[in-house]
Length: 563
Image (cartoon, rainbow, N blue to C red; front, side, top):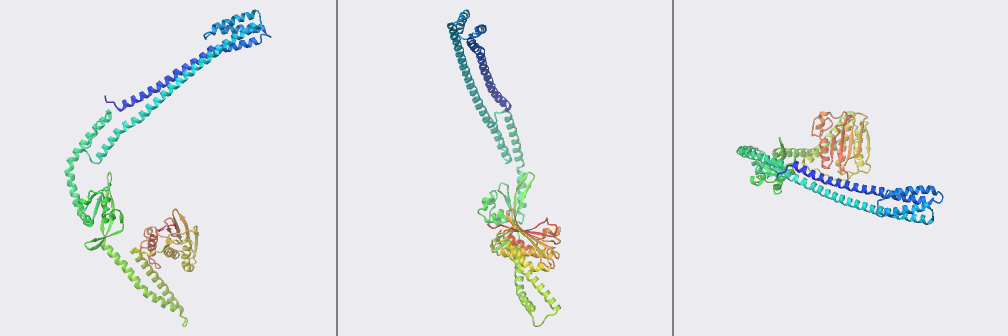
């Protein structure tokens, strides 16, 4: 007979309830028995003991108050005669009555002594009875404790067995149902659930198997149409000019178009259907595509020519969640060659300009030192303008060289652990003259007197001088530039704040771009902040504009602390 889950729960609960009821009834029976025995001791023997002790008291005062003692003894002996409960107590009480009558008729020491002996014998009878009944009550209490303890163990064992067995009995069908649902989710519509012994679960299994059958029939009917759609999708993928690889969420390669197979030098059967990570172990180019070179150009030798590709990963989302990842390789050979030509041009033109600039610097120096023929005011003004233009050209050439170095990725660094106060002091010394011309004061707050950072001291001073130069340039006459150095979380921060007009909101996103609108002025080249960012990145730090600054502009340098 198949029992439903409800019937199983009901029977199990009733069984546990019956065990607990049995324990309660057993405890009540023994408690009532012990209570009755205690009452019997009180009613039968305790009263006799109390009467007999009263007789001793009356005999003790017979010498002084005989009449009162006779009356008291008569009353107590009568009470004892009406409370005879133990074997032998009747004969002893009769003898006590006889000896009492003799004593009452003529008081003598022999009669009183005999009465005391009768009273003591009756006391021993009742005390022995009390001891015997107490032992019996203790035995009943021990029996009650034993049976209650045995009942408690039985209830505990049955309850534990029920608690352990019932969840396993209930969870096993649920696990089978979960596995069947997972099989359907994996499109294995041939999976079926065997029958259960529980009525509700068996009905659920039948309904589940019917649903799986319907899904299997539907899947078979749509197989041809799905194959046609698959062939059409493969044709579209192969028509893409960029190498493309599709990877499922579980890591298996779903497809790879012809350009991707040619670039990887693999056949479709060696890639599609396999785990991408496993294939990448024997194909370094695929490893770079998957996770090694996102955002960085990848150089590949194609038919004897070096070509460059940019790898990108695009997550593919469906209505029910992620469908996988599409890895695309974009051919950027033309752009890479143009960028390299631009870098070579910048390096060449900068190098070619250094020689005439050096010569002009010597000529300007000689003119400034010529003392034989004094220069007129107009000539001095022209010479001063020439010196400013020369310094500006020298700075631009230096920035172009730094830019070319940064673009090639070969920034020469001399990493060390310079002191933060020393870096700030060197930068302030370099800007002292420019600040004095506008009567600008530097307000420094260094909270890291002995702190060191991991950086190139010269490059760091260059970056800080660039920020201070911008701050001096945009600060009003007599303004204040604040320099703060403090530890922030796990890095060291140095901020530079000015009291200038600040940076417009629409230009803040382009503040670190080369030649961006707003970066170039009559006094700057628009390269300083861009080069500063490259230097900071090369040293493992960063530079950022503080958008919270409202009065002027604030830039923050982040450095890694020295180990």
